[in-house]
Length: 192
Length: 82
Ligand SMILES: [Fe+2]
Image 1 (cartoon, rainbow over the protein chains, first blue to last red):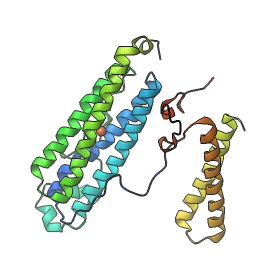
Image 2: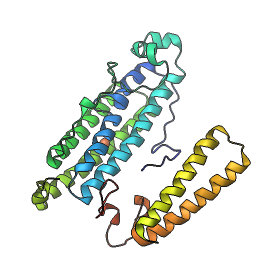
Image 3: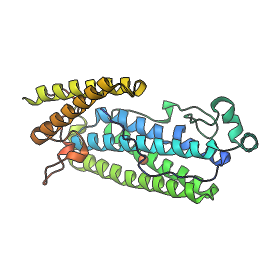
């Protein structure tokens, strides 16, 4: 089970409202490569993993992604909260604003609501872990893209932290995949 | 207490704590409820400590074995242990 800690994993203090940036960053909340997608992917895949190591890793990374979801939601809220109606109307955030106001809704930057089709659960550890490796790289690419279009140091500092976590997750997933493929191959196919 | 019995106790006290938690969210000045919430929280902490010393960590923070990270040991909660 889970317990909530009333703190962010990494602090977010954004001084300047920026609804345009909010409409981009929200993609890492509810988009296909975002943190909700990551979290649900790992926390769903873990049930059919073959050993303690992979079950632990998917539980732990899936849990950390929940904390990242909270960080991204915080960024969106802080970027939108003090934006004027006019600033919002003249930005790509305007379309989102019609239904969600200055709130945080799981959608991508095109306004497409979160969809579990963004990830897979195959119950095959190799297929699932290879997907996880790709997912971490795709999340890293979105953070790279945000860094390309954002010149707000308050936002970029947090985005760089999140980007770095994707790199670490990729590394750990690679190690479990290696472990399964090289030493535990028979166990994978025992019908679990 | 056996591992299963202790786990059942922890779940019961933690659930009671959660119930008082929700109630207090909307009645934050109810002194009697505050007292009961505190008692449930303390009892839960005590039982968790006893459990972890005897049967291994309930959170990664309390993995105590200096030789192996016993956090990763099976079974996990969704597995039947028989
Ligand atoms: Fe990640």
